[in-house]
Length: 369
Image (cartoon, rainbow, N blue to C red; front, side, top):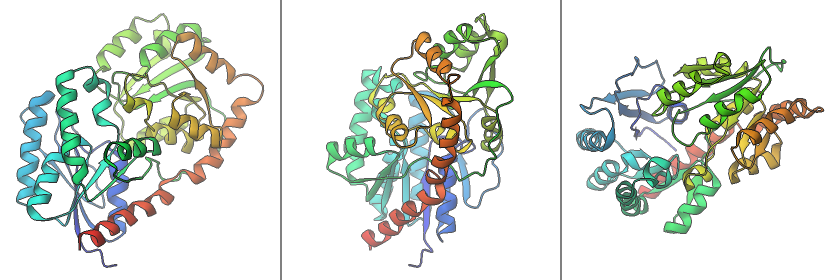
């Protein structure tokens, strides 16, 4: 199929650190599409790196909150209205309104990419007016998408139950990395990702004084709770062993991940979005050959049942976290998990996942003809 068509992918972040969208856009370009990734400029934004796809960031006066969402959506609506495209890709609910409306006005297909169960993230569930608003957005605009996909089977099932609409699954897996298995030089427990509510970072910091003196905690990323978590780390008796690194580029993060002894993914059960999540750090740890400690939620259990690459914890008490860390030092468990990461890495990689992605967009062109 000749694919000389233009896709505009819309996100509300600043593009720099969005590895999933980098993979998606570059794969679509490789398949013959013209692709523009459209986001927004933030106060801490750095210059955009060179990519195979086009990139543009919208300037907003507001930095955060509902005013920012409203302003960005208006500016996004106007951009889409006055620029040509053949397919518009809305990533999550915070870009779906202008994408769906302009798509309808221009009789162009809208593809919905649900990175999470947006209406159930902690920041929204805890605020009834926000929850009601975004639930209305989901009910109004998700059903009119031409085709849709999400990051895991659990979320796909939820969307089908809500709207009787099939969501394909495009997992947030990284490119295959050939990593030479080597023992970790230091016992570093690594968290990578957003420093936001519900990520188990408070509990991990509380567990640090209970762990051996040679065990360190590295936190890579930024977010709403960065300063609060930093203050908590500085107040810990283990503060000399806790390092906050802030944002890193994907390439920098890969290097640091390979230095880790253990990766952590300790989400709190603060909403269905987290409970049914499948965080990309899961696969980043696997590709780096790093065993992990995951919360025992459905998607992480399913991965671990198949590949045995992690220890699962049922709760986030410091005692449970310490017990999981200690278990990795017993017998040959750590070495076995590390070997299993090598096996899982060959199966859970973007080189295989991207074929399904291209099929989706080829299908959009067929459906919309």
